[in-house]
Length: 72
Image (cartoon, rainbow, N blue to C red; front, side):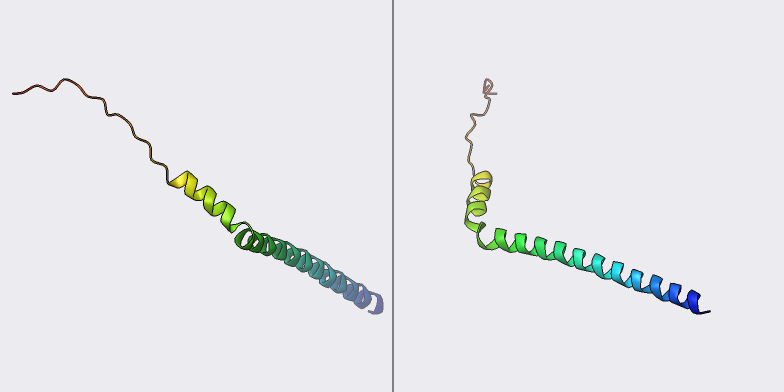
């Protein structure tokens, strides 16, 4: 029973370490996304605000097509 228990403990330790590594990588990815979001919100706000306004508020005057107007 000794070697089987040792093997089982070893597999449990491997699973814990893999889970910890996965959680750490996931945490780093989340922090990276959070950092990028903060960067865009804080430092690039004015630039993207101007860009959005220029794309949104644009007036184009079109001459409507007119046909002949008949008086009854």
